[in-house]
Amino acid sequence: MLIIGEKLNSSIPSVATAIGAMDRPFIEKLALDQVRAGAGVIDVNAGAFLEREIELLPWLVTTVQAVTDVPLCIDSPSPAALAAALAVAGGKVLINSISAEEDRYRSVIPLVKKYKASIIALCMDDRGIPASVGQRLEIARTLTDRLQADGIDANDIYLDVMVQPIGTDNESGRVALAAVRAIRDQIPAIHITCGLSNVSFGLPKRRLLNQAFAVALAASGMDVMFIDPLDERMMALLAAIRALTGTDEYCCDYLAAYRAGKLG
Amino acid sequence: MLIIGEKLNSSIPSVATAIGAMDRPFIEKLALDQVRAGAGVIDVNAGAFLEREIELLPWLVTTVQAVTDVPLCIDSPSPAALAAALAVAGGKVLINSISAEEDRYRSVIPLVKKYKASIIALCMDDRGIPASVGQRLEIARTLTDRLQADGIDANDIYLDVMVQPIGTDNESGRVALAAVRAIRDQIPAIHITCGLSNVSFGLPKRRLLNQAFAVALAASGMDVMFIDPLDERMMALLAAIRALTGTDEYCCDYLAAYRAGKLG
Image 1 (cartoon, rainbow over the protein chains, first blue to last red):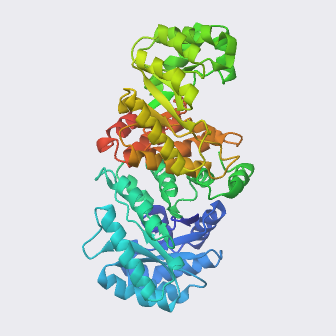
Image 2: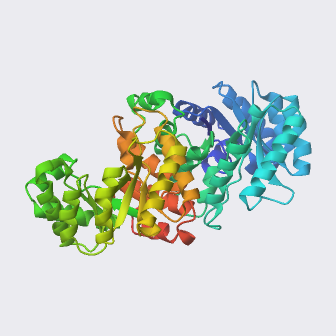
């Protein structure tokens, strides 16, 4: 299981303030805290800044890469900001994101190829986010086939099942879990992820919902968790579900986490 | 989702002491605490006493039924102790348990019929507990068919998928989860349960493992949870996974639990 640390995101007010002020110590600390907590990839996002994103996203990349070798997930809706950030990034990166929307696909695929990046592929097309499990599987197949035809290795494809809030649609959690199972079963070679905290939008005790959903997603076959690794209870529950689903051989990592005092 | 409170069990030392001493206030309090915490059924077990079980199990039944109307789950490996307890029990009861072992089936089925009871049906036969998901599904089908042929309604059948400890077999959690999905898919009319805390036997931080496993089981289609309802974190996570899987319409129960301060 790969943990992508989601905290360096300009949608979080305190982080936006630090990015806007180019507060290097704040960013360095938040990057390192996530790595120490178990993040294997750090997401960086300056999307809230619109006009300044093209300046701030590369700054965020170099700031984080100055203190850690952990791969980055470069997160922007803007191909220009992605290009500027990729130009200064070192090592293997994960681009967040492409989709089956035609314009988006065409504008991002050259960057994926040029930088031999891994890619988060959103399970949506020009018709939007599909409502049914079957439609999600169909888009997942189409998108995976097209990426592979463009020379992207299955191991570099991170399919995002596009989780919607249960507060607006009671079925959206169930649909996401079923989509993960279907995609894991039908397209076993790719990674599966999602912005799982979307599921709890608008409801109280979001961390509790996110924790339960992460456990259920992991049990359904999701292998890449886009979460807050500083949530100790979340990390403990993920250690537990790995042991429970046989992906932590002999429960070695679970026992190590216990001995390190990380299970609460 | 039905919660069966598992605390009145003679395998727990403090409870065994209270049962052995016929400590009525202790038993009453533990029954009521579980009901107030959300248990819809209370399990009663005096199996640790062997010779005295036939005296103590009926005493436990009448003691608990003196303070609550919640149905009981009468839990014994001994048909004689079950018969003695059923003779004094009022209302609808759940018998724990029958199996596809020939002797056990023949000795327990008359009690199920006589008392029009619901029945926990262990997914095992004279060959033992099956290793594979396919074999479990096969026994589940055979046992369900036989019970229905004997006049037991599908709604009165609570299939126990027989969870084994992950500490001795890394695959046992994964197998149980897959068995729940297969049985929910193939035999949708019956209830599915298990003694889920078996999964964590021999490992540290058992509550954490039990919590993660309960969430994964619920997401896989288990509808009857045999747990400690006094574990507030467990109950909060189960409220969360119900909301996340669409079994709590409009998240009403989740929001009520939040307003009641039950989500931590």
